[in-house]
Amino acid sequence: MKCGLSLDVRDIDETTINIDPIQVGGRLTADAMKAVIAYGDGYSVCDNCRKPNRLDMIKSPPIDAFHRDLAAFVNMDEARVVPGARRAFQAVAGTYIEKGDPVLLTALSHYTEFLSVEAYGGVPLEIQKSSENIITADAAGEKIDSVKREYGRPPKLLYVDHFDYQFGNEHEVKGIIKVAKQNDIPVLYNGAYTVGIMPVDGRDLGADFVVGSAHKSMASPAPSGVIAVTKERAEEVFRTTKAQADLTKRTFGIKEVEMMGCTLMGVTLVGMMASFPHVRERVKHWDCHLSNGRMIVDALLAIDGTTVKSEYPRKHSLTRIDTTGSFDTVARTHKKRGFFLTSALKEKGIAGTIPGATKVWKFNTYGMTDAQARYTAKAFQDIALQNGLIVLR
Ligand SMILES: *Cc1c(COP(=O)(O)O)cnc(C)c1O
Image (cartoon, rainbow, N blue to C red; front, side, top):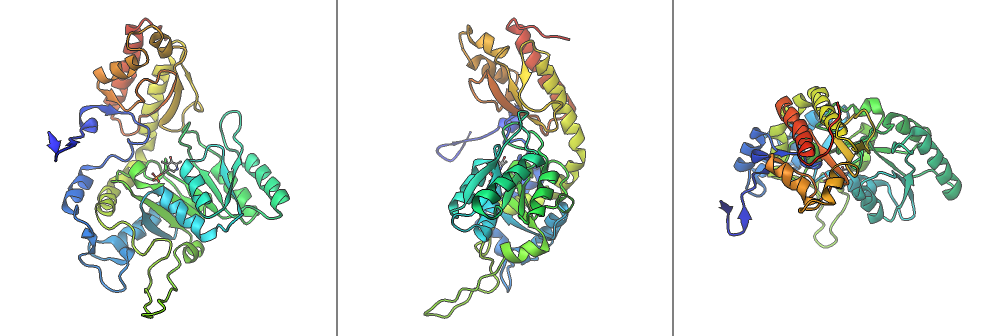
């Protein structure tokens, strides 16, 4: 079956158990799929846009109420939808960073955080990770001190990922935010792997900005995301236009500069909205997703020679595993080489790993049913046994 000339139907999430780290939290709910079909046309949410003409004020569909719900969901004062977490970074960076400003990221930060700093001429500086690949409050304090010594002023901004994309490790966000506050540094909490997956309380954490990726973690179409801020920061990041055209003398109402006026005007926004009630509910069941993930990690660790690169016990469903001493020993002599694992998994209906990877690789078990988790755990061990590896316990 084709969608037009060159687009194959994509059915990976219908026909397989997908463990792709970046995809599992973004899969649409059935309600989002319906909304996407109904609102597929461009500017579809603008049917009932009335003065003062801003996306977050549209009452039908109830986009205004959705914005309030989003802010409440992460316990912040105001929220806006954005085309991905990266555009939220960009809005914050654009508001605060001037050329030459030192900005703190971490040794595990995502590339999009670096790009947002670069875009405004900031100097990205990393907080060191510990030998266990954790960003600690102590390390943040040390880096802040060293920046103050070198630049004669504190960093302009600090970005911190609650869980990083490389290991899925939890970092000392609350402690880091506390140290930053003592130095009057505004903090961007990056919840790309938390908002929509587990409960997030931005006020309790003390964050100035809470950023989420809706296409990664809120069962939404790409590109979509959320930025939620405190009242004080809202006036800065969501400042409205002051521009006036020289010839025509036009002004542009209450359009927000960093949002380029309006952001998500169709499928992305209605997809987020339709999934939201499900997302709000599912974060309450994070512990079940976590225990399924732990069971699968333990099943892998029972394969002799396997180790886990992520912190252990696991606190997230995204895990970096090292099978150099197990699956990779099979790959060395297998006629399919490294592809034997991808291919054996595929035969068992499991997809989403990097083709050919048998050394260090990542997977995310989020969203599985208990039965799927048990099946996946057994599938890994069956593949190991079929290839002459030893399964302990
Ligand atoms: C995925 C990811 C991003 C980028 O999110 P987008 O919504 O695609 O812009 C940023 N930071 C981290 C830690 C991520 O994992």
